Amino acid sequence: MTALINSTEAIVASTKDEDLKRIGHKILNQQRISFNDGVILFEKGSLAYLGALANHVREQKHGDKTYFNRNFHIEPTNVCVFSCKFCSYSRLYAHKEEGWELSIDQMLDIVKSYDGKPVTEVHIVGGVHPKMNLAFFIDLLKAIKAHRPDLHIKGFTPVELDYMFRKAKVSVEEGMRLTHEAGLDSLPGGGAEIFHPDIRSQICDDKVNAEGWLHIHKAAHDLGMHSNATMLYGHIESYAHRIDHMDRLRKLQDETGGFNTFIPLKFRNKGNDMSHIAESSTIEDMKVYAVGRLYLDNFPHVKAYWPMLGRKSAQLTLNFGVNDIDGTIDDSTKIYSMAGSEEQSPTMNTAQLVTLIKQVKRQPIERDTLYNEIHDYTNNDVAEVELSLN
Ligand code: V47
Ligand code: SF4
Image 1 (tube, protein in one colour):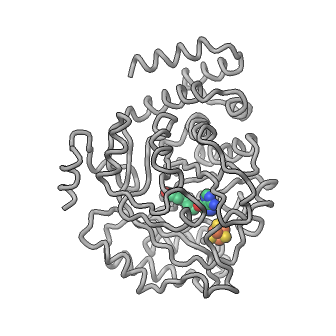
Image 2 (cartoon, rainbow, N blue to C red):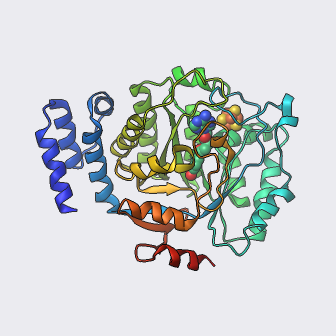
Image 3 (cartoon, rainbow, N blue to C red):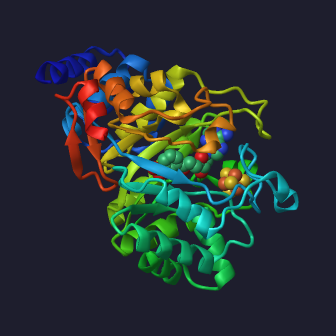
């Protein structure tokens, strides 16, 4: 690793661009980069330069450790009162017969289907159904916890929570307290999209705004809960909009320290109202991960969500700042396969994921939601990994 750090110093020293050199020195000296620095990195940073810096920071924080978590998803419904232009998944209430809506018993059956399996987390997220209210979700949370108390429930974006709290006429703080007491352990990162109103008004005009999203995460952090943050990139946003998004996250993280993970989400263009927009290149994808790692100096983890990005690109991100790959165990979420991800059947078992990480000489570590290490697979071969699952 020392050789790598020295080689990063050499790359910074040899760059001809004075701005990039200045920013590179800041990063090597562990100084925070500014808003303008972030924009400059996007504008002028080559893939090699950004990759070297992001990998340097990644290895300083985590060495070769690459985390994954065994979880499963529940999508209560794809019926949604909102109409985000990038969404390929939702059905309006008026067409609800084209969608699905699960009862509490049906969702509990999904949880029960994992009985005896070594999953540590359930991720619950879906559309905003006008009839699924706060009381319904409180009953769901209680039912899951009664059945399997050790299962960490990561659920509901501020889009869903804002709607259910407003309908139930409770404040954000009260709503978060009620859901937390019922069993909600942490919040996933969805619904963030791009915070800046100039973009948000064009792609998801009618759902919770940036302030509302951040308020709900802050209320969760104030209760001691942790959460993630996503950024939907690669559509109509500019570099400055991306940095503005990260800047708002960085500021809240300075205040609360409650975010675990930043998850850039690549916009996929199939079957939605933004299909005319070309998808970003793999080079651009890697740059987003790298700048995310460099700008969000107070976020411990950066995650690639492979069902959306594809396996090979996810592997590549491990050299561009990423230290976490999400998605194992029948992770059959529909949101990406419906939006045109190449992963039409997004399932990968633990042995496959471990192999994927080892192929690029990183250290596969199973974690729980809060990044407690469960098992280091470095010295297990694939056959042993498979055996350990039986
Ligand atoms: O908020 C919707 C995105 C998100 C498209 O916290 C799209 O661990 C690309 O947030 N192209 C939901 N993206 C998923 C999500 C998530 C996923 C995995 C892990 C975690 C976590 C969170 O999906 C939405 C939206 O930003 N999305 N449509 C699309 N066409
Ligand atoms: Fe509804 Fe979420 Fe789709 Fe927006 S992204 S339409 S809030 S399901």
